[in-house]
Length: 136
Image (cartoon, rainbow, N blue to C red; front, side, top):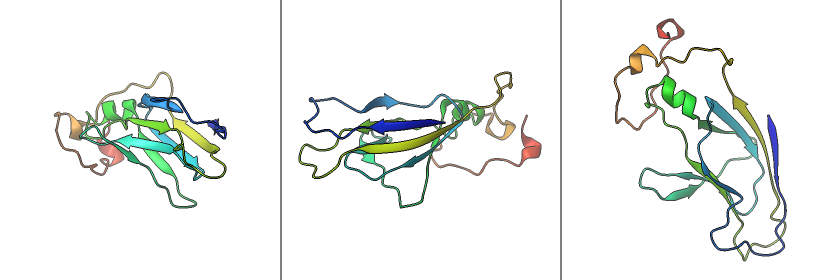
């Protein structure tokens, strides 16, 4: 688990500067609880554009990581995401805090794609995972 603090910015960010650069998470799942503040989490769409993530109060964000993409043979894709700076005209406190839980299997776990996902696919929707009895 990691606590992230993005301090209040009293001066505008430099052009192109980000609070956290674009990346995917390497594990299986990431759960995120975050405060609502100017700027913040964005996810990359299929067309390469970025979309702001708006989370209702008392809700969590879940990102699929690289390992889950491997387990599902890319039926579930890793979420490319970044954290942007608040806009230059943001009023009030721009501090952003997040609590992040990174789920990882045991270090010695064998990672084999689910048999139901053995054939690569271009499908973009997220199917329900297979029952535990079909996992290898």
